Length: 109
Image 1 (spheres, rainbow, N blue to C red):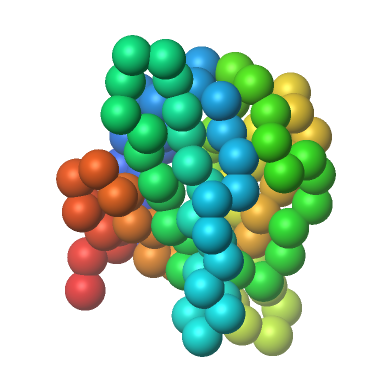
Image 2 (cartoon, rainbow, N blue to C red; image 1 turned 90 degrees about the horizontal axis):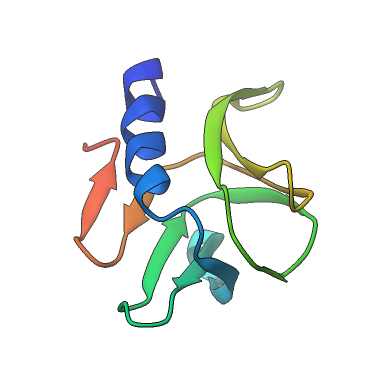
């Protein structure tokens, strides 16, 4: 994961700010957590965080302000921290991140 990847993820997440966020699904074989982002009058968007290693905070909250930053896991190297400070939410994963409405995956392989 590179800083430009974080910038791309944040750019897309910024477009989804204000929606309600909630845990959508967990796929054990990929340690993948899907967070659903919902808004009245808009189609829901599922954002998949692959290689999830840590989750802290609520499982549902209004007015999301999700952002990402680089995070180093001592035994694994560079990872992503996904956070919403206002909600008290934090998730750490190894990536990539997949946006369900577009199929976009960051970083691309």
